[in-house]
Image (cartoon, rainbow, N blue to C red; front, side, top):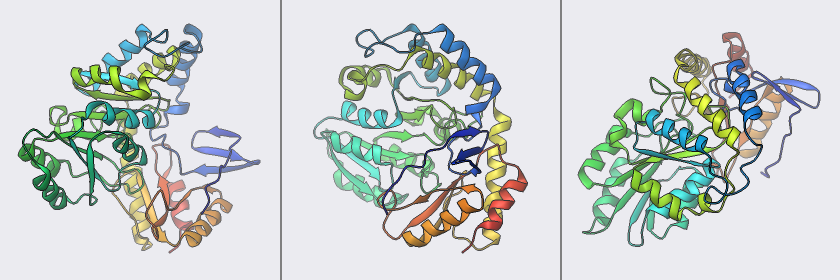
Length: 365
């Protein structure tokens, strides 16, 4: 199936307008409703009025502002890590982190279903790398035993919450292997930041503690309702990224007003416990409704994939739902494996029980 663009005219809350018709949007990663929150809208206006519209250069030239360092300090405190570095997007971060921190002769192991940006970053590194079967800790353990040799640094990279399957990485089992083999663990928390943890700090800090993880990639573009991304890790890793991460070194810095707004967004997020609880409540309600209909779901989170398998059949389901007023997307190969086409539904805090029930009633086997 060929990819295509679907331009929308406007967004209001969890609704979008396209070609004059309004739909309930079930594709958005705006899990907490941050993009139109009145407090954040006011913070954005204040930031835009206080800062230039552009940074004017890379951060190593004229594009470095004190507000960027203030934001990075706040990120490090939030995720309980020694240091943080802002990137222009999640793709930039994943493309730039591993090539900068691994060395020739190192070995990287990546969960097979990790995001394309992670795989691209691994391939650009000078390390040898292998995929392990999705969440298969026995398989990962076998690979670690086979490739552990004196003097070789090992890395394991995975998402904490998988964007197309909606399931969580088995962090306790990963940490047991980390204790045994001494690898460095890098987690992409893009879809967990904001939604999980007491202050929205994600799965790693909230579940196992930041001291058990060597690096975290997060984004402002999902639950925080903004744009940009970041890496949190050791001070040494940050220094290496500033020297060697090509997406950081050779990109124009984000506008300073965006740093100011992102700082406001993470502070807002830390106090949004009620919205986090609503996301979990809505997700469980919707999953229960789908299970009662016998639908084949994956995962256990606010990301709800419904697998139909055949690409044409999945596309037809998506079109039928759009005709009924629900904006949904069909996901096909190569984003997912061949024969695993699915509807990837995203549940946010904004939906009412009636709206979730209405969508569930329209779904079919």
